[in-house]
Image (tube, rainbow, N blue to C red):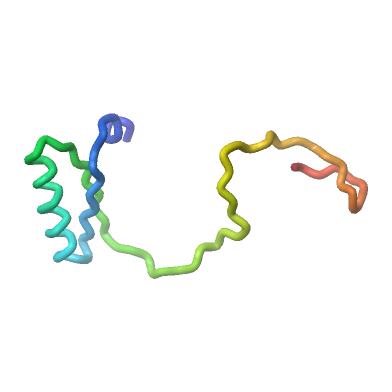
Length: 81
């Protein structure tokens, strides 16, 4: 995998379930290559049905505090933080 991502490349998806989109993306990729660009092809057999995420309470942070122990103020026992 590292070899595939070692150089800067344009990622092009080739959906096997959508011939029109696959052909369009393939033509675009060939144009990029003809101009000297590098392409990473991603063949996609199918897409799962759209479902809502199961993640709740997601936050994006730039740094994370180390995990440690603290005394719970509510019940007086130690909990992971």
